[in-house]
Length: 75
Image (cartoon, rainbow, N blue to C red; front, side, top):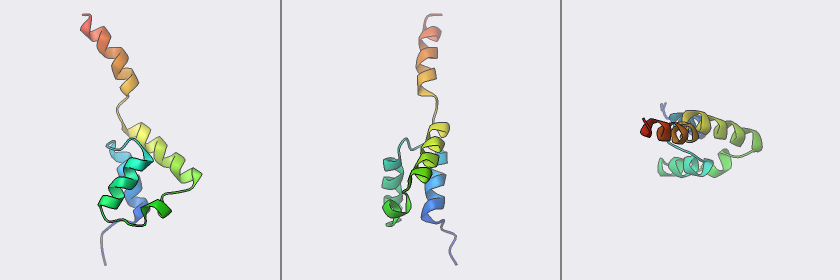
């Protein structure tokens, strides 16, 4: 028995990591990791929406950082 996650499990892990901004980035990484079935497994509007939301939630708030930095520079 293997401890390797399924394609879907790994996709959700990658989305939560904050290192991937898009579904294409996740699919590319899955392919690099040997998940050849990624394009067919990572599909459907509901799943894609969930993954996008996880990616957005896990990534730093770039817009907020851009508005805060000028204020800090002015001090």
